[in-house]
Image: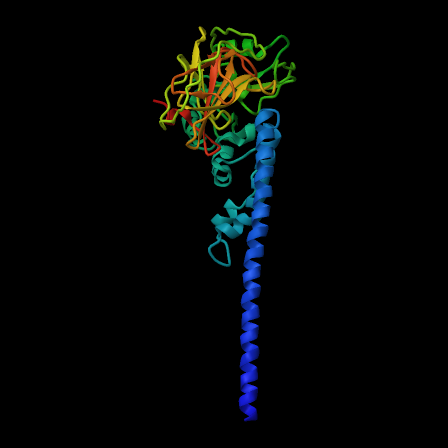
Length: 383
């Protein structure tokens, strides 16, 4: 009888403990979920604020931000690379070679450099110029192919011609992108530099948008004698350049409200003209230039969320449309804005006139397509 009482008492304690344990884990699950929501909410707010700041001051913080990112990525791979690459307790000689630290300056071997850098970083190297030591059997063509550059870029950067000969042990400067590296002399402007290397007035925008070029003033693009500028897509030839002036917010006759609208999900070309600058990691948009200007059209139906020169910087007069399907389009550097915030526009409605306000070097439209907040290549969507 006593044993039965003890057994029943023991079973009762086990049931009570089991119930308490279930209650504890239930509470822990709810508490963890709430805390995670709070942490994620704080992270999203911080991220949005940081992205907004960097986007507003794009170009000013790009160089230190990318340099810091490159250093952090290199540090991570040096510390954790050997473990990630190792499939066992010991690493092979080839794995040890791949684990060697990479420097952005000085002499760098392309295979090691390509092993460690993310796609954009390894291609543009944070804007740094590296030195390549020529090996047996290498030619200008093979070296250019290794670094994803054109032959002419290698030749121009090293004062060589197509008839020049190279030999093993000789060093070559490797630019981060195709184009020309220019040393500024007294009297130089971005327009005169663009003209010298074959860029027209609207194409000079590529010099401004290249994130590793620096200016005394980000609105007037003042230069200092002795500094270097990268001229993307520049060539050693002469071409005309037509500088244009900028102006502050200007509103024209408003386009009538379109009433109830619904996005079609496809985009039409927002302006007529030629593409003066394409999509790149430092320019996640396309520039459509037309010296005659012209109307800027809504690429799809939606609601205006931004209209005018709202910050006195960067995009200048711009219009943003929320299409209500996860897509947002942006139209920048307008000379005249003809819509207002909250207005509904239909596909093809006039938003304003092409201009050169803000951080611009010539009459053109800077056009962005954002999907879920991420910038996309507009050429993949336009019809």
